[in-house]
Length: 252
Image 1 (cartoon, rainbow, N blue to C red):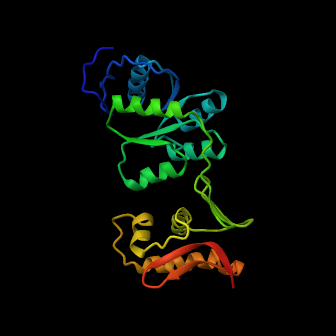
Image 2: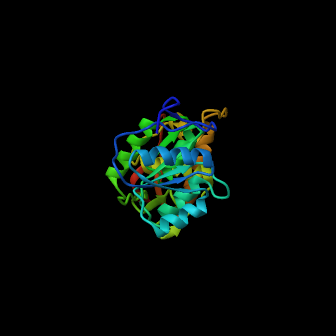
Image 3: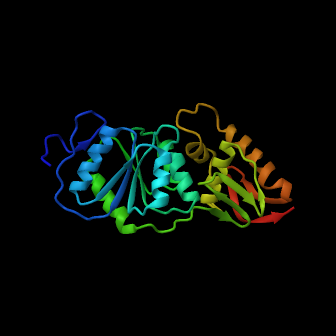
């Protein structure tokens, strides 16, 4: 394949993939409803030495992955019917550990975090360099389909970001989206004091214009669900500094 366009993969009709001469091999599934872009990726990756299949929908991707083995999956974030995020979540919840590289035109940090939280291995924003894409695929193929449990646990408090569920012991917790986000942040940083501004930055996006007292409100909501019903105190206030989730709950 002759290079006739700059070395970028875009959504523009008529763009062509550059010729690639180094082959690393492997079987790749491209999941994208943009057939022109999917064909572009397929041609370029085939020239790079990969066996490539294309699935235009999330449900088709789930079926193919259940029936075949792939070395990597290129998964578009926005798909008809079932989003790439949901496809990734379902694969991981069913314990399919094929490496997943998410492709998207969205550049919001929240979107990247969401993709990684549900089990994606890597993330690229369109337009991207085809050389970089193949380099990342090579890295994923080398890593292989290694089980990567994402459950967070501190004491008997645990959270699964893939299924979006949390438990205290064997009791499942009924959490709102923001409560879940706050708890996930604490479980990712056990016994570390987190300031209100740090919690705001990680759980609320940069466009939020409210005061930091919203953090106090959600910490209170969270305590009412993860501590008080179980007669323990694990989420504590550090006066003048913020909040901390202790390694072990204290009985009260």
